[in-house]
Image (cartoon, rainbow, N blue to C red; front, top):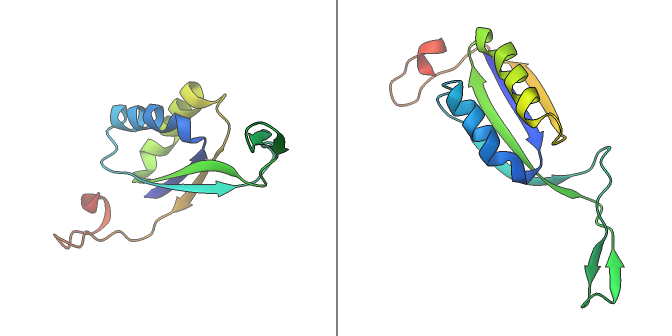
Amino acid sequence: MKQIQIVMPNSELDALNEILKDAHVGGMSHYRMEGRGHTKPEELEVARGTMKYTPEYIPRIKVEVVVKDEQVEELITNILNRLGNAGGKIFVVDVPIVVDLRTSKRGESAL
């Protein structure tokens, strides 16, 4: 099993949710956060437009899902095809053990 972490602009959450539903991914978690990277933040007007401010950090969203190994490449391809111009990153991490707290199922059956 793999955990896929997607860091992207907030505005793309609904589109990513549809991609995950189409791929029959059972669940997802998302977090609102801020960060900095290669993308330059846009200058903001403050104080009724009399001053300008460039924030250090850009609002982002991080989505985490755990999927079967055979779903990873197809899911990444679908995300790139539909959200490739949005910016962000995809990280894939091995998940050696998964346990469902309610049913005590382990492994892929816990997904």
